[in-house]
Length: 517
Image (cartoon, rainbow, N blue to C red; front, side, top):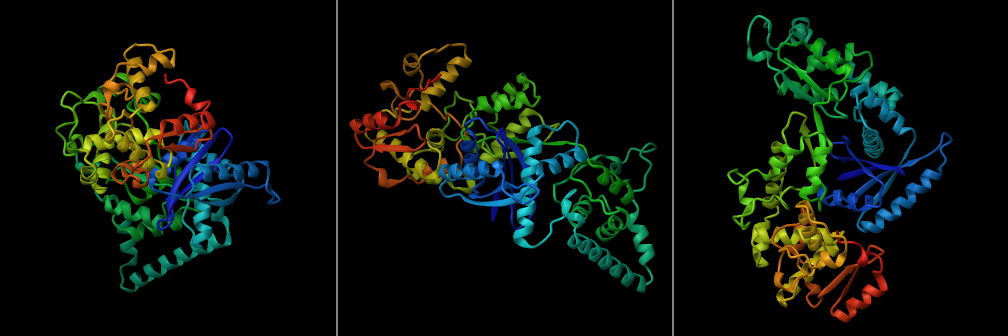
C-alpha cells in the first residue's frame, strides 16, 4: 500500500510518500498554502496513484489536542471533499519540525523552510509505518533509537554478527577475514598513478536506509569487499550513531573506516527533487527551473531542442511537422536529479517518463478506439486535465467534449482560450479584458466558430487520470453538452443551453466572471 503524508501548517504543507512494503518514508517538496493547495495535493495523488493519506495530528506535552489539531482535522474534511475516494488516517505527533530541522542541519547546509516541512512529513509517515507494522525501520537521528526496543535491536544485531564471526573463527580465519574485509577494494596511490579505481563515484544513501541496505548497495557498487564486515564494523565502531542520508563522493581506494567516517558526518547534497504537477504548462516548468538556479537561455534552449531522433520519439506521433512544442509531453511527477544535470537532461528525463506512462497504459491503441491518434488523445486529455479536478469528473468532461465534436459544436473551453492568451502575452501582446481575450484569433481558442474541434495542440501536461478519461470516457453522459465548475468547486452539467445558463446563475457568479488573462 502506498501512502502520502502531510505535515499540515498554515503557511506550508510538507509532503512525503512511502510504500508500506518497503517502510521507508521519502520527503518531497512542500506546498504553499495559497488557495491552490488542495488542487495540488489532488494532482500529486493522481500522479502517484495514491489515495491513502496520513496527516500529522499535533498534541501538547500532556498529550492533549491543540488549536492546530483542530485546524488539521478541518483540513482533513476539506481534503476529503476534494478527493472523495481519499482514505485519511491521523498520526499523533509533536515537535516533528524540531526533529526535522535537526536532521537537516546534520545533512546539509542552506536548507529552506519547505525542506523542514517535507522532512517533518517523512518523520510522521515513518512513525506511522513503524506503529502499524510493529517493525522498526532504521532512521537517521530518530528519537526512538534511544528506546529499549531500539537498544535490543542494536544488541541483537551485534550479537548475531559476533556469532557469525565466531563461527568463522572456528574455521581459523575469522580475524584474517575481518581485517581483509576492511581493506579498500583497490589499493593504489591515486597521486602517483591514473587508475580507474581513483574515479569518483557518487553514492546516495536514502533517508531511512538501514546499515544492511547500505552495505548491500556499497558492495553492488564495488566499493567494499564484504557486506558482513561492513555491518560489523559499523555496529562496533559507530558509538550508537547512525549513518546519515545524503550524497557521498567515494572511490574504490577508500577503506571501510574512511567510508563509515564520512557517512557518520553526513554527505553533501548532489541531488535535488523537482516536481511537475499534472496540469502544469511548459511556462510553469520553465519558471520553476529558472527559480532553482538554471539559466533562462539554457532552459529555453532545452524546451525548444529537437528530440525527434530519440528512442522515445514515437510519443510525438501525429504532432504537426512544423511544431516542436513539448507541451503535453513533460509528465507530472516528482523526479530526482543531480545538480550537474543540464536542463536538456532534465527535459529528456520527463519525456522518457511520458513514453513509459503512455506505453504502460497502452494509450495509443485505446485512443485509436475512440477515433483519436496519439497527439489528439494527449491534446484532449490536456484540456480535460485543466477543466476537472478528479477522475470521475474528468471522465464526464471527456465524454461531453466528444459529444460536442460529434454534434459539430465548438469545444468552447475557456482553458484553451487562456492558453491562447498566454501564448500571445509571451509574444508581447496585452489583454486587459475578457471580451478581447475571448475573441483572440488563435487555433487554441476553441470558442471561435472557425476553430471547431480540438485546439491546435496540448495546453498542459495531462496526468494518468486525464489520459484514462479520454481513453475511457463516461458514456452515461452521451446526451450532455454543457458543464461548468461552480464557485463551490463542484461540477454542474446540463443537456441544454438553457439549463447551462441557469447553472451559471445558480452556481457560478464569481468563477465564471474571472479574468481569462
